[in-house]
Length: 198
Image 1 (cartoon, rainbow, N blue to C red):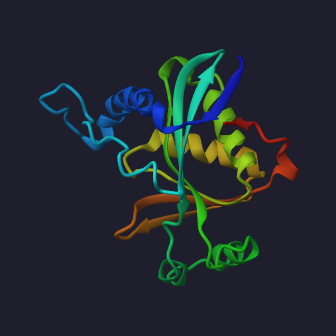
Image 2 (cartoon, rainbow, N blue to C red):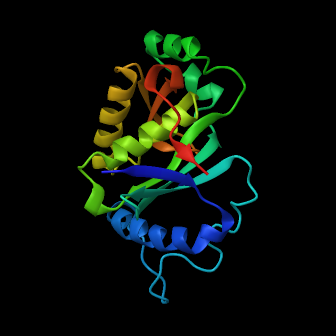
């Protein structure tokens, strides 16, 4: 199974929109979102505010040459200083200090991540995640909805294997996010060459 991810460009918007419809359908069991009268979840404004955002990146996933999903990454953080002050476990605060989390700079956040059902449970999702982590070394945050327990299990397994269990999970209840967030540091020196094109 050959897996590749390429940086999406503005002209890829229709492809991303079609994939996002599949993603929205899968995800509706957690979001309870309804489709519009058009029969779609999205409309003509899809991604209109994203392409000019220098902090946002989108990637198309292909398996053996066929479209298989997408990943969106954002340079930001869900965890504010006041959220860290409320931590009760000293080990969590120490971990954040050790990886440089408390510095005033953006982190890599997985904003959206979708692998088509055909390719799940075959390692495609984990491979794509590792490619992104390697390509963008630094501090990463990955968040999941409280209701989406399969995603939580997936990311704990993937991040745990990638980092050798060197990560922490915080549970936020703020205006920015409600649910678990895994935090860790990635490094291409530890995990191999960069694998993203585009």
